[in-house]
Figure 1 (cartoon, rainbow, N blue to C red):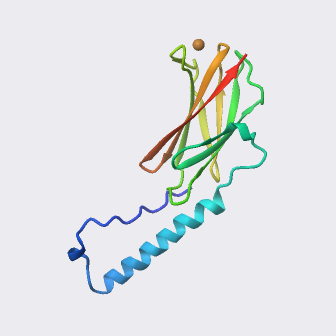
Figure 2: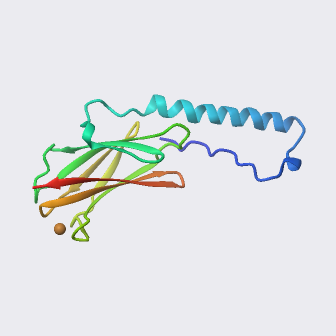
Length: 159
Ligand SMILES: [Cu+2]
């Protein structure tokens, strides 16, 4: 996915804005960029209905759904996580997703680092996760969207 163009940021006071034809071009470009930003996420990114509704996280700027593969996470066995992450209206497109997990009570993470591959249209596949003990684990999804970052987290109980 190509990174979306940055929104033009006014860096000058009103008096500094060009008054010639350049300002009309600037206005048209800005309008085109704004339309693109609104239109793209709705078309390109959708949370699928076949993801478990309990595995949904709504952050400030991003919404994420995930499912484990296999669906039941077993202690001491590798598993994968499929995730779909979509920007809310007006937020920049997602450029990368980090997937990790920790046990908050024990202050430790996994013994393995997940490999995350982008599958397009907001989908990611994280492989090589393993929960090496039972208890409460917390998934950490680190959304990157250009220079913007948001961490989404969800706890799961593993027996
Ligand atoms: Cu632990």
